[in-house]
Length: 250
Image (tube, rainbow, N blue to C red; front, side, top):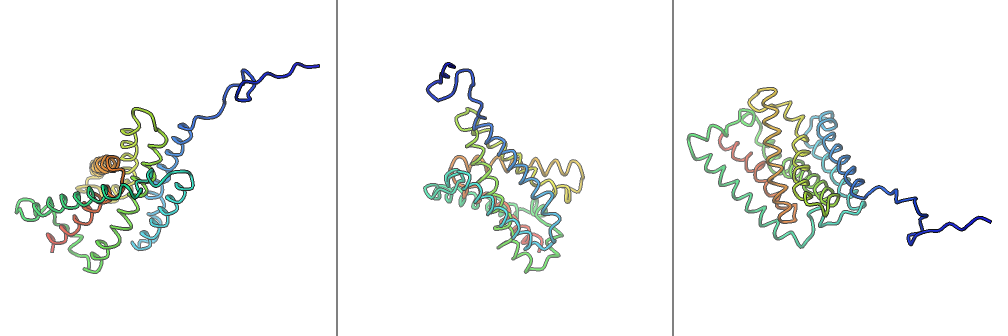
């Protein structure tokens, strides 16, 4: 007769150990996969879609909708995603203030003779009014700002904070990780139109500026707990900026 196996309180035999992979490791791997997927989406998939901006906007909307639904199905809460109703007021206050500050900055640049030429853009000058209106009212707010904020300051930020919860570097780590992915998201666009027309330095400049902007938006999103705060910043710089460029150019 063989002796019965002795088990500990958890039901495991002594010496077997717990071979489960820590949740932080699993979630960190998911963070990497999601970040890589976002980067591939904008740098590899979107460029091969039809050039019609409406088609690309629809693709982004569908993609981010699937991403948010997958995040919810995977266990992220509305608070994790920066969409909890209790944070809406703070997010809208910060977002509204950001739009106002950006508008004031562009107004000063527009009114000063020394800075107004910096706002001029020959590409905008040749665009039909209907195309500019479409960009300002639909393509940028929905296809760019909303989709990017839900993807980065929503899903990726929430997933990163959940993965690193309890670590002293969790908050700062989430900000750096999301801002870095956000910068690389713009790589294809930076290569196609480098700042100042300088191939290497221009691309680096675009990525650095985008990374800094990503840090600012992530910090504000984390401070308020609301993605609406970063949406306000993003909306202000993109839409208000476009309006200022149109006014200065035309």
